[in-house]
Image 1: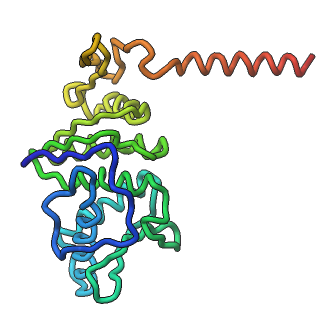
Image 2: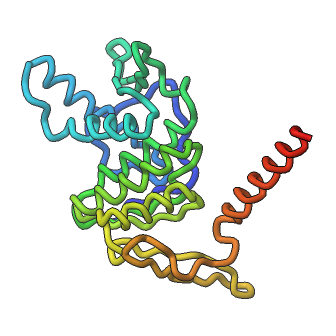
Length: 243
C-alpha cells in the first residue's frame, strides 16, 4: 500500500476527462488518474477562490504541479474547465495569454504530469517507483526532474526508485551532491550490465563532489572525445579556409 508505481509508457492525453467528484485513491500504473487528481485539486482551489477563502490543503497538488511545470519551462500555468453541467472537465495548459487543451500541446507535458503528480501525491514513508521519467522531455526539464525527486524525498521522507537513461537527470543529481543539497548516502546509483544471460547491478561509487570513481566503460558514450573531434575539425577547416 505504500508503493506507487509508474511505468515507462504513460496514458496519452485526452480531450476531456470524466471526474468522479473526489480525489482518486491512486493514479494508476500508467498515470491514467493523474489528471483526475489534478481536477480534484483544481476544483477545491476554484471553490476557495469563489468564496474568497485561503486555498485548502487539497489545492496544494494543483499549485505545486504548476510550480514544477514552470521550473521545467513547459507551461506558465494550469486551469480546469467544466464542460456544461456534465462530469467532464478539460485540463488547459497556459502559456502567456493562451490556454490550450492538454491534447493540443507537446507529448512531453502529458507524459511528465503523472511523474510530477506521483511525486507530490506520495505521503511520508511512501516508495515511488518510476520508469523513464524523462520520456519526451527536453534537457532542462530532465534536469529539473532530479531537483523534484531530491526535494520531495528530503522534505516528505519519500523514497524514489528511478530507472532512467537520462544523462541530464543523472548529471543534475551529481551537481546536487556537489552543492551538498543531498549526500552520496541519500542517493545510491547503480548501473545495470549484462553478465552472460543475467543482469548485474553495479553500484556506482560517488564522492562528496558527485564524481563517480568507477565509471563503466562507454557509460554515456564518449562526450569528451566528441568535443575533441569537433574542435579538431573546426581547426582543420579554419586552416583550409585561410589557405
